[in-house]
Image (cartoon, rainbow, N blue to C red; front, side, top):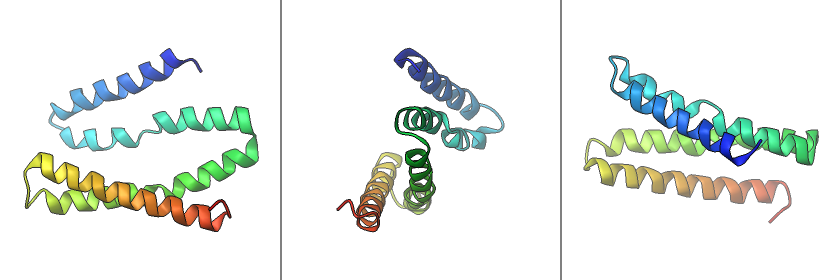
Length: 114
């Protein structure tokens, strides 16, 4: 896939999020970031350039990668009640980064890449 197509896919998702956030069903804007736009791109690239086994490993890592996102959401849910939006978002991103870092360390140790 060329770079322009990837950029257009990402931009389309951002536009849809903006449109949905202004509708009566604003909560659906929380579903769109989970549309596998970038996963489709990553899976296509890994599958076509590295093969099926590398793609299977990437998919397995992606399953575990849901955990940092869940931690982000839980942290934001609780932080939003105590802090301004910008600080709550920053705190939740820090929680995501810590969880992602831990996931990478555990993954590398598990797969002998450390």
